[in-house]
Length: 147
Image 1 (cartoon, one colour):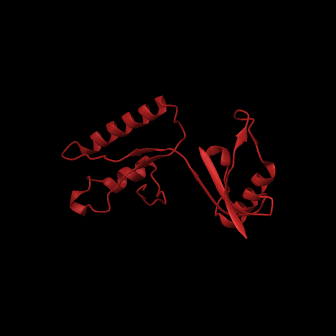
Image 2 (cartoon, helix red, strand yellow):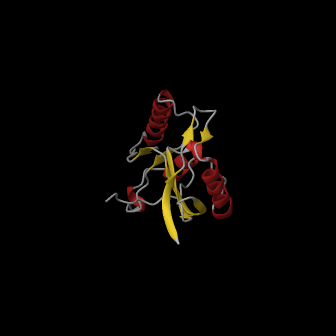
Image 3 (spheres, one colour):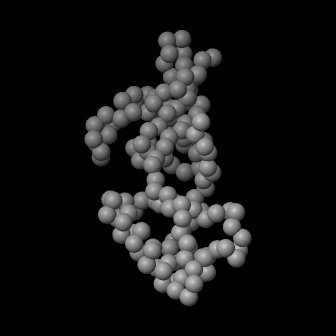
C-alpha cells in the first residue's frame, strides 16, 4: 500500500470556486464527515493537503489524513494595571477592534494570549470578567515550533 500527499486545490474566484480534482475533494469531504467533530469548508483555509492511499497508477482511493492552515491575528500581549485598569482595557479593546476591522477582519477570529506561567497576582484586575465582556472563548490550540 502506498500513501501520498495531495493538495486540495480550487479553480475560479470566490464565491464560485470549484475543486480542481472533484473525486479527491469528495474523498476528503467523506473523510472529514467521518473523522472531524464539525463540518469544514476547505475554501475558508489558505491551503489544504490530504494523505491518501493510491492505486497502482497513483490515483487516490482513500483519504487517511488531512491538514490545512489559516493565518490569524494573534495578540501576544495585553496588560493593564492600576486604578484605571477597567477603562484602559475598554480603550485597548476598542482600538484593537477598530484596527482589525480596518484590515477587513470583521467577523473573523483573533487570538489573545493568556500566559499559563503567570501567577494569579500577575493577572490584570478583573481579567476573567474582561474576557467574558469581550466574548472570548477557549481556542483549542497548542503551540508548535517550526523546524
